[in-house]
Amino acid sequence: MSMSVIKEPKLIHREFELERVVLFSDAVFAIAITLLIIEIRLPNIPDHLPPDGYYTLMKPMLFAFLTFAASFIFIGNFWLRHVQLCRFLQHYDEGFIRRNLFFLFFIVSFPFTTSAMMHLTAHFMLPLFLYCCNLAGCLAGLFWISYYLFQRRPSLTIPGYQTEKELLYQRYKYNFLTMATGFTCIAMVYFIFPENAMMQRLSYFLLPALVLFNHFRLRIKRRNTLRLVHIDKTS
Image (cartoon, rainbow, N blue to C red; front, side, top):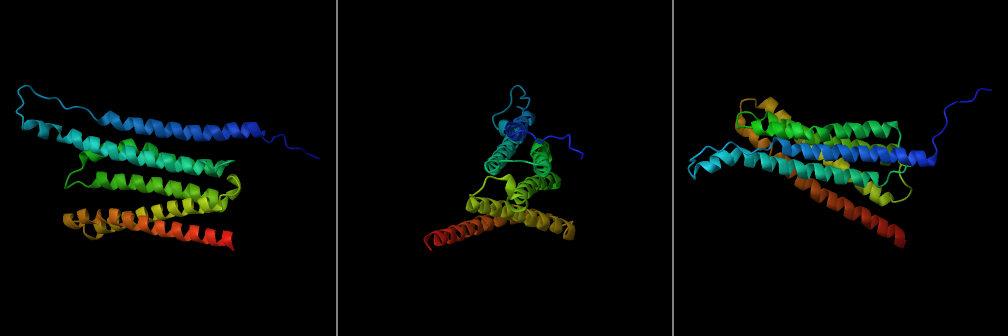
């Protein structure tokens, strides 16, 4: 009778390995959010610059700082969502690690797409297209992880808290579907109206409209879910 030479890791080792996975993710977030500021530099200010020339000279840096602030908020929000997911983890497997790496790939892409926004012009919208693609990839990664943990492999999570898990999963699903729908519509506008710059610019307003719609839909979903839980407890 043959016996396997591969031994199951002890519980303390499994906890340490899970901690390594989470700490590695935190390090990726920290590095990505730090690299955002590297591209922002003060311009060379010539001597005897007239007062009205400062705004023209500083305008690119101001736009770069606003883009940095937006990316900082996005990465910080994605880190918060990742923390919320990891709160429910008690085990991990290779499937979770692969999905987590997929998500982190788009996190480390933020410094590149943020710096690309410095080349955005009225006639060159590709940087904004890449930035939206970066956001869509992050949302897809969060949804993929939540689907894997809460739907396919719930044994990897701590028992109980079904309402919280369901609400978190629904939020990530709707966020991804909202961004994917908006991104697809923008791509279709560019494909159907390749020469119509006005239609192309207007298509980007679809994203905030969908985000607002998604916000109210999630509030209704949360209220209905909590109402059902309250009815089950009182019945």
